[in-house]
Length: 249
Image (tube, rainbow, N blue to C red; front, side):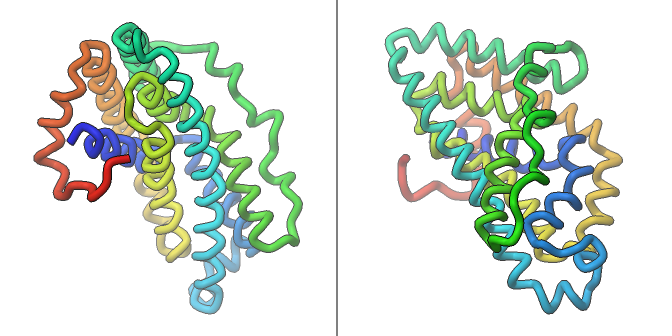
């Protein structure tokens, strides 16, 4: 059950990462890039109906782009972690402390200035992706998104990455669930852009509250990891998880 619990946590963290203060303002930019439609077209209910299949496919291809990158990173970190499995207890302590620090950063209680060195947003511009290659350019936007926004969602992203490196769970699958969690809101927006944007704007007003909840989740996860009590997380989430995955990854 520990595996399913970690997947659930990764999915939830990915889902709420969508509401990051630096992702929400870029929603309209990303959708104009991945669909090739203007903002006016995207907000038109008539064009939404005519182009629905194109918008949904483009959104899925975009999600595929960043999911591939995040999944590969998760697999790589997991493999590196396996080299140190004999000292996994110490890595759990280090990883737990790091996740707690990231949670405190998200809560605005501390600053981790070294994370700014990992900011590629000023070096890589998603809008520089060549257009006109239909879904290939959309896929590349997803790849560039993974590079640029890894800094934007640093506390949640690096927490899940640390989790993959300090447990024996398949890191690629953990990051896959994180990516799907992040991708679901994009897909919902793509299904009805003109209705979703006003909802997102209303939700953004509660961005600070959502960040505090996420910070609490990260700090709790860090404590469980640091004290080598991840199995307790299983017992807690067992009541929340309405199903069991049919396979172990």
